[in-house]
Amino acid sequence: MAKKNRKHSKIDKLPADIKETVEQMMQADFTYAEIADYIRDCGFEISVTSVWRHATNLNATVETLRMAQENFRVIMDEIARYPQLDTSEGIIRLLSHHVIEAINNTDEEQWKNIDPIKLIRQSNALIRAASYKNNMDLKNKDIMEAGMEQVKTLVFEAMARENPKLYAEVTRFLSEKQEDLK
Image (cartoon, rainbow, N blue to C red; front, side):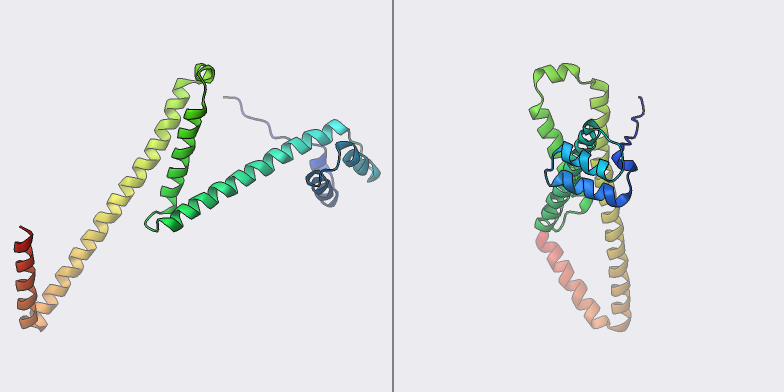
């Protein structure tokens, strides 16, 4: 797979204060010609096409950032709604939603152009991520349960030693409850 070249525009090479002003002008809907004139007035040569190219890339970057912020907000809302979720579960849910949405919005012609091997690899990566998370949850649960068993053992041993009457009462109570469950 060919490595994508980094984009370096003439505007990227401008002094920081001029570049910042230019990008603010782009967001404030100045025309490309007005922006090119401003840059020329600052003593730098530039074409309207160069301004257009930088504005296109800037808009794509800003839109990507907005999408990332929106996705993060959705994840945080989901986690707030379901406190038992952790961040990775929220991310997996969001990715799964986007995958399903992309599948539903793909028309027949696009399916012909999709590399099935790449699609399978990406699907496997998502499945592995979910599986890894489930595996970690199980391991953590096992560790917590083992820890609770250890605490119970310590408590019962201490109770039997220090307060045998209470120990006898608690074990009798637990035995009765265990019989009730059968």
